[in-house]
Structures are given as structure tokens and as C-alpha cells.
Image (cartoon, rainbow, N blue to C red; front, side, top):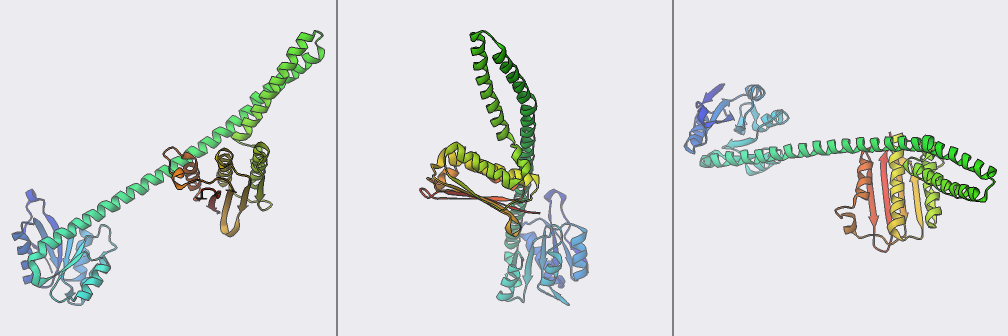
Length: 362
């Protein structure tokens, strides 16, 4: 049986309630109680599980008020059938025969609240509270979804920016190698010819000075090109990390050990993330750590690529990682997220620092 009780007043914007109840007297009593409390609502009453589900699927209700025991089923059967529907409204039990244990079990399963029929005067308050809690929960879920969407967009933007940066670095490195490097080399040949064939000492002196400056410019262009995108990346991740470690040890004098398998096959995106992490970590060690030894460990065990850069330097306090403009470690963490990985930083003052990036492999 489906019977509307009470006509809605458009000016009051009434709430729409679905009342699951097989007693016409109790239906009417609930409606009168809400009217006396000044709660503007329109109630649709049903007494079978089939009609109940039909109503929920046909339109959106603000709340369900349900008796616990009904012919052939209970309110918990109705809740189990309705809870997975889109925009399921909050459920409030209104029963004359429900024990406290059953009521607590119902609330644990997601029922919003319960009330005994003997305490009908509290019905408006209970329904209002259930609506408020439901609205707060919906607002929180909406905010969480919006936050997740924003974080997803930020991650996509970060990934796009990182890819653009790497592509631009590769393009600049090629231009330096092909254009600037080629031009400087040609000039070097011309100056060397002038130095060999000039007869005046002053001309030869100028040529030799220009050759020295040109050699310095060639070295600088090679160094810049290697920092932008070293050709060693084409030889694989292990070779690139070993080259980083050797270059770091030669530049700083700090003994640097690398433990890695002979080769590791990864996608170009993962390779760049691991390489840039090692590069940034070694840069930080050279700037701040005051270390006397550095250890890099690279592995691809158990379906994960793991890179650890560990030093025995001065370490850092927890507050140093959270400084407003400390973007180095944050940038590494965001870079790892672009390939589904994560960054772990462990450090104690006076006991060194360990930076670990872990990336799941396809």
C-alpha cells in the first residue's frame, strides 16, 4: 500500500520523507507529531519491501522513517537493499519493539538513529538531527571528492610539467651539442691554424689566449649539456647512477660507493625520476651534509625499483624539512608520485641522512 499523507506547501519547501510502516494509525501519529512541531514535510507511506525499493528508485527522498518489524521482513532488510543505491537517504528506526542491543547493531550497520514509539514527542528532534548529520557527512564527502580531484589535477599538472622540463632539457642539450658545440669547435680549429701559421709573436699570443678561453667555453658547454641530460642515460639507469656517483666523488672528494645489479630495465619515465632523485640527493649532500662517505643502493627486487642515497653527514632536524621554501625534497616527492612512487626521508642530527625513492614496476 502506498498512500501520501499531508499535502506539501510549495512556499514551505517541504522535506520528502518515505515512511515504511504497516500501521495506518502509527503513520498518522507520526505525521501529526511532525506537523505540530512545525516541520514542513510530505510523507509517502509504504508497507512492503517491493514498494519501498520502487519508491527509492523512482525519486529522491530526504529521509526514511522505518518500523523495525514488518510483515515478512525487517527494517534491516530494507536498509541492506537500499544502502547501496545512489544518494541513499538517512534511515531512522521508529519502533515499539526493538531492544537496545538490536538498535546499537543497527546503528553500527549505518542506520542514522532510532526512537521508540512510546517517545514519539522526540521524533521531530531525532529527524532534524539525522538530517543535519547526513548533510554534514555529504558535505564532507563532497569536500573529500573535490580535494581528491584537485590533488589528481595537481599530480597530472606536475607530471606534465616534469615531462615538459625533461623534453626542454633534452632539446637544449641537443642544441648545445649540435650548434654551440659545433661552432666552438670550428672556431677552435681556426684559432689553432692561426697559432700555427702566424709569424708575429703578438698574434700568436692572442691566438693562444683565445684558445684557452675557447677551451674553457667548450668545457662549460659540455658540463651544462651533461647536467641537462647526460648521454649516459641512453646506456641505462645503472650506468647513469654510477656516472653520477663518479662525477660527485671527483668533484667533492667524498668517497661514494654504488651497489647495483649489472643492469635494470625500466621505462624512460621511471629512469628519469630515479636519475633526478639521485642527482638532487647528491647535490644536497655536497651542499649541506658535510659527509665523509656516501652510499647509493639501487635494486629492482619484488616488483619495485628502489634507490637509496645515504650519507654519514650532519643530518637535519625535522623542522628543516618543513621550511616554507624547502622545495627540494617536496619536488622529489612530487616527481616520484608522477610514476606511482613515493619518497621516504630519514635523518637524525649528527647521524646522517637517508633518502629512498620506491617505484612500483610494471
